[in-house]
Length: 318
Image (tube, rainbow, N blue to C red; front, side, top):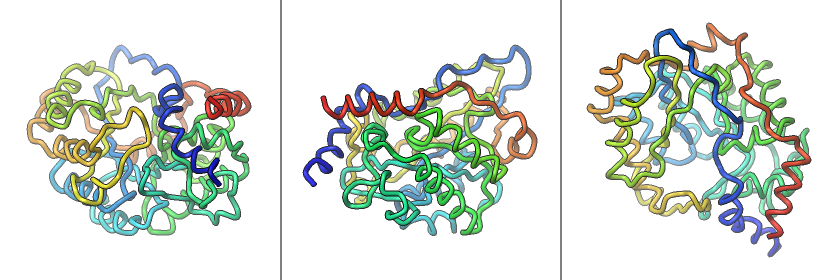
C-alpha cells in the first residue's frame, strides 16, 4: 500500500521531465491560402461543479465553439443539463485515464474489476500518465474504458461530435492512438488535432491578472491563414475549486484563481472584439464532423508502448 501512495505523489517529480501536454509531435504546416479559422475549445468540463458553472457563464455570454466533457465524474449530469440548453456548441468526450488533483480523486466509468491495470489501490486513476504507464496498462482494458466513456456520453443524450484526451494519456503510445482512432471510427466522430489544427499558445501559466492581455496578444499574433485551435480551462474561484491542488510541478498554484481568470477571458468583450477584428471564422468540431470526417489524419506517431513503459518505470524508480 505505501508504494501505491508514493507512486501517486511521485508524479510531481516525474511530470517535470515527462511533460503533460500533447504528444502528437510536430504541428502541420499552415496552408498558404484560405480563410483563417479559429476553434475555441474548453476542457475539463464536468469534472466539478465550479467547472460547470464556469461553462454556463461562458455559453451565455462568452466565446466558445467546442466543449470537452469529462464523463467520469459525479458532476456529469449537471454538465449535460447545461449543454442541452446550448445545442449550437460542439460537444466532445475528454477521454480520461488519469486524475491530477491531490484532494479530489476520479476513477473509471468501467467497474474497477474490469480495468485493474488502470487504477491504483483505491480504484482511482493515478495522478499522471507516467505512473499509469509504469503499471503496464493492458490494451484491452484501455479500449474497454475509453469505449465506456464514449458510450456513457451517448447514453446521457448528448450529440457527440469529437473526442480528445486529458493530459494526452489516451494517446501517449502508438497502440493507444490506434485504439482512439478505432473508437472514433466506430462512433463516427472526429478527433481533436486530426483536422490540421495549429495549436495556439494558451494562457494556463500567466498570472491571473495577466491572462486577458496575453490572450488578446495571442489572437493578434495568429497568422491570417490556416485553422487554429486555442484551448482554455475555465473554472470558478470558489471554495470547492480552491480546495484542490495540482500534482503537476507545472500546475499553477491557487488553481481556482487561474481558472476563474480563464473564464473571465472567455467572457471579456475585449477578447471577443479581438477575434472579430481579426475576422477569424469561428468553427466547432460539429461542422468538421459533418464535412471532413473522412479527411482526418494523425499528425505524428507516439512512441511504441514498450518504449513508453520502459521510460515510465525508470522515471518512477528515480
